[in-house]
Length: 140
Image 1: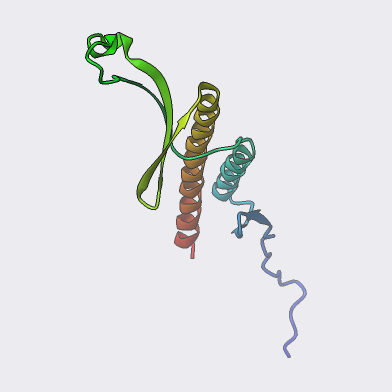
Image 2: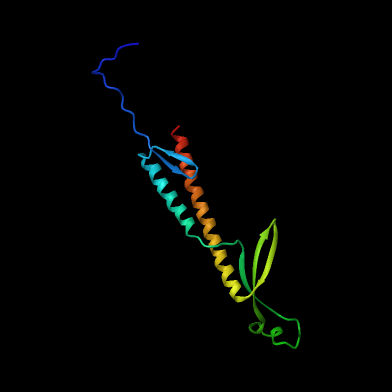
């Protein structure tokens, strides 16, 4: 064991604090880039909590011709039967559709809008995550 000169200064270690971010840690919260990413990620996660009930698919309004030659719908597009509301979505590559009443159509339309918000938030979360991972990988 060697003796150290007490006048010799020890190199100071930088304090490392960690921020918990979705299953991983961002090292060195003092890093302004990682701090900014952590803030963006937190805002997006909080936005997820504000979503309402959601469902994938689309709600459409359709009108139809009945097929009778004597009916006004066969001559005038403005006098077609309907509107009839449908909710369509995919399951295992197959399109599924359900007929809806007007009140049901409003509910499912809101759910479909919430689903689009969810998908947009998830894309943004992935984008921030990818940037953080790339930044951390460059620092190794």
